[in-house]
Structure formats: C-alpha cells, structure tokens
Figure 1 (cartoon, rainbow, N blue to C red):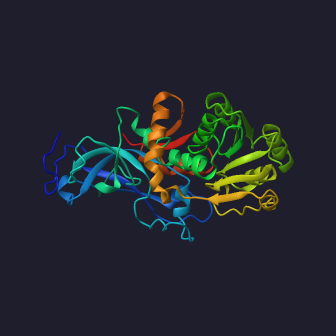
Figure 2: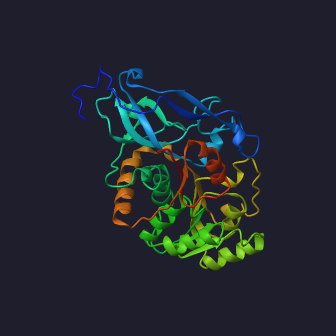
Figure 3: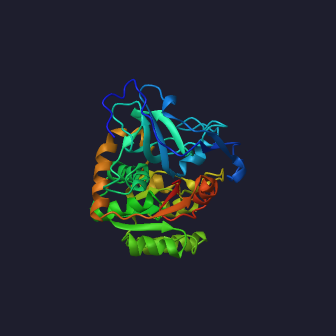
Length: 354
C-alpha cells in the first residue's frame, strides 16, 4: 500500500484488535525482581485517528528483554532516568506498521523501535528504524543485528581493538552480547575463551560458536577451582577481557591479566539485584597497567550504521551464528525477564506476541 501524502492524513488500518494489552511497572523491586513488580493492563485499541503528524502506529511482534532493564527499575543514580511507575515497561520492540502519518513509513513496513512491553503503540517516526524482514528474520534485529550485536561490535573493535594472536576472554559467553563478542574476535584471529554457567551453555559456545574453550563457573564454584580452570583455558594469560558479569567471575579474570591488558566493562549482572561485588584482585589493574573502560552503546550512535551493516552481512553469510530463547505471549514477559537475570536463557531472550 503506497500513500502519496502521509503528512496530514492518517492512514486507516484494518486490525482485529478491539483492545490491546500492556505490562506496566507496578512496584520497584527490593532485591530480586518478582512477578508482583508488574501489572497487566487492557486498554482500548489504538487507531489511525489517534495519530498526530509524524507519528506511526506499530503492532509489535517481538519484545526484547535485556539486563539493563533491571537498572532502570531502580531509582539509583545511573546513566539514564528510572523507569516510571505505572507506565509501560520499557524495552526494544520489533513489529509492523499498521498506520502512519510519517512520510517515510507505510503500512506493512517492518520496524524496530522502543515501544515497550505492549502489543501495540504509537511513536514518532524518527524513533523507528526500518528493517529488511525479507533478508533476515524480524527477531534478529533485536539481537545479533540490534543493540546486543552493536554492543559486542563496539567493545571488540573500538575499546579492545582486538588483534590476531591475542587471547580474549568474555563472560556470559552464551548470551546475546557475549556470543557475538567471541565470534567477532575469532574472525579477527584471537584465541577466545568464554565463561558460562552449565555444561549445555559451554558446549554451545565451543561446539556451535567456535570458541577455543569455555569455563563452566557453575562446575568450578570455589575461587581456586575457577582460577585454575581459567588459567588452563588461557595458558598465555588474558590480553583482552569483555566483562558482562562481575563478581567472582570478573575477579578470576583480573588475576589472569597480562601486562597492558584491555578491559571492556559492559555489564555486572551478578550485582543487578543489589548484591555486593568485592574484588580480591583489583590490584592487577595497577600492576598489569590495565586499561578498563565502561561503556553504554547508545552513547555511540555514530558507529551504529557501520556496525549494523557488518553484522547483517555476517549473519546473512552464515559467519555469525545466533540462538534465541523465545517466550510466548505478553503475559510470559515477567517470568522470562526474571529468568534472564538468573541466566536461564541461551542466546537472546525474546517474547513473541504474534
């Protein structure tokens, strides 16, 4: 359907929805997130006449669940404003345009945006990214060819500046970000060691993604066991560290750093429920003259076009593999999110709405 002028005229849409559902943040977590922190609401269907000039109505097909959401549920000072109570839970979405008053979007376009935990929503067109769902599955644009993929790309290429022959270690190696980190480093020519929880995840990282080794932190729970296993997997020490977890996993990696090691600090999920994260080997940052840089990928939008282009090409050619854990239906989102925070997912955690 092509519309000659969408600037002042809303596009009518045909939809069977008389109402739609959303999930809001009902209460801030105290410690671990629980289902009681969320509330499902039913609202009247959004229609084309609700749109102002420049707005687009989207029917969401997938929701992205990501660890950063836990931080936004808190009022603690951070890099971004807290999620508001009684508002739609924030998050990235992938869906299809069902009505538009923006000249660059037509009914049927596949788009990625930030409409949150809802079956549909209205947003400004300049906040949407049109994607090619004929080339790659729509869900991929929330994962390996979306924010997690760009996060991995930025850390490997801009902060770590990985080079062939170096040893790179990445924690949460089977997750949406870590799995891409390791594969990109392997393509560069690094020795790649993952850290993950459980035999299934470690087998996936080595056998499917091609990492050189993977340390199972669940099977090596004492400090000595974890350190011995990591040293065996990285016998020449660690040149590059992409950190997603924090706590004892991060501490063991610090103990194995080589001189002038580089660390990309992406996340510390072990402490997202307010747990303390003491480090015994923080002195290695000094004695190894390491460079540590924390980063938020949305502060580096200038690299997104290049990163997304390269990631899409690698996925299309089969050089970059991915896995998705998909929960079915909006009501499944809270439990899926809680599972994500405890490491129950493999690869990218999504919620499929339709």
